[in-house]
Image 1 (cartoon, rainbow, N blue to C red):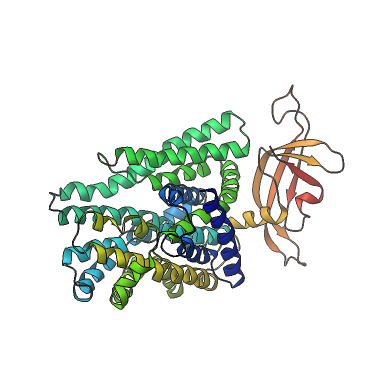
Image 2 (image 1 turned 60 degrees about the vertical axis):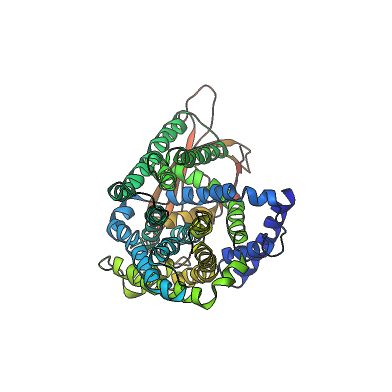
Length: 489
C-alpha cells in the first residue's frame, strides 16, 4: 500500500500544479490522475489501497467539512436560511423529475428505476463544492450576501434529502413495505439529530480546551478524532434512527467558532495543512472509483439523460434563490455551483446493481458517466464564474484572515521569540478592529487590523499577570517574521 500512497502523492501533486498553472482547479487534475492510476486503467493502485479507499475518502471529507464548520458564521446563516432550505431539496426534486421523464425513453428503464437513477444523480458533490466555497469565503468573495455560505450549507443538506429518497425507492423496487410517514419524517429528524450530535461534543471540546492548555496540533488531532467518532455513531445507529453525521461534523466546528473564535481559527489553520494531503486522497481515490468502460456503455443516451436532467435541476436552483437578494449573475453562479457530481455517485451508484435491480447495470453506468461529465465541468465553472461574479466585501471579516496570512501573525496560545533580544513571549489576547489608514500606497480608507497582547511567561504567575505588551498590526506593518519567530510546540 505504501507504493500506492507514493503514486497518489507524486502524481496528484503534479496534476494539481499543472492544472493550477493553467488557471484551472487542481482537483480536476487529481480526479483525472485517479482515473488513470485506478484499477480500471493502469492499475497502479494496489488492491489493499482500494479496499480501504472508502475509509480514506470519508476521513478526507471529514477534514474539509470540519474546515467548512469553522467558516460558518451565525449571522450569515440567518441571512441565507430560507434559500438554503429550498436549495437543499427543490433542485434535487426537479432533477429526479427530469430523469423520470427522460430515462424510460432513452435508457429503457421503468419509471421506478428511472426515479432511483434520479436520486443518485440528484446529489451535488460536497467533495467538489465545499473546498471551492471555502476558498471564496477565505478571500471574502461573495461575503456581503453570504453566497458561498448559502451554497455550502445547502449542499450538505441536499445529500441527506436525496439519500433518504433513494432508500425509499430502492425498498419499493425490492417489494418491501415502506412507512412513508416515517421516511418523510426521517429527513428533518436526521438533520436535527446530526446537528445536535455535533453541537454537544463541540461545546465540550471548547470547555476542555479552555481549561487545559493543549498545544495546537493536539487540539486539532482531538477534534478530528471526535469528528470521525461522530460518523461511526451514525453507522451504529442508522438502522434504528436517522442521523446526518456529516452535518454534525460541520456543527462541531461551528460551535467552537461561536464560543471562541481565536481557538477556531487556530484549529482551522492546522486543518488547512492536513487538507493538503487529505485533498490528494479524496480526489485521486474518487477518480479511481470511475470505471471508464462502464461509463462508455451508457453512451450518448446516458449523456442526454444527465444533461437533460441538469436543465431541470438548474431551473429548480434558480427558482430556489428567487427573493434572496441576488442579481441574475449571482443566481447563475448558484446554478453552476450545483452541477458537480462525484462523492455520492461513487458511493451509491453500484447499490441498485448489488440489490438485484433489473436496470442496475444501466444505473451504474450513468452514475459513473455523471462523474466524468459534471465534476470537471462544474469545478471549472465554479472557479471561473465565481472569480467574475462574486464581489469582495470591503468590510468583510475575511479581510482579517488575509491580513493574518500577509503578516504571518501568531495566534492566541502561540509562543514567540524576539529575534533581537531572544526573549520568549506568549500571545494571550487578540482583537479584530478596523482602522482608518491615511491616503498613500495602501489606498487609505478603512483597513483591517489585529491587536495582539503578549505576556512574558513566569512559572510563579498566572497568564496575563506580570510583564505584558501589545501591538496593533495593520497592512502597513512588516511581516511578523521581520522581528519575531513563532516557536513550534
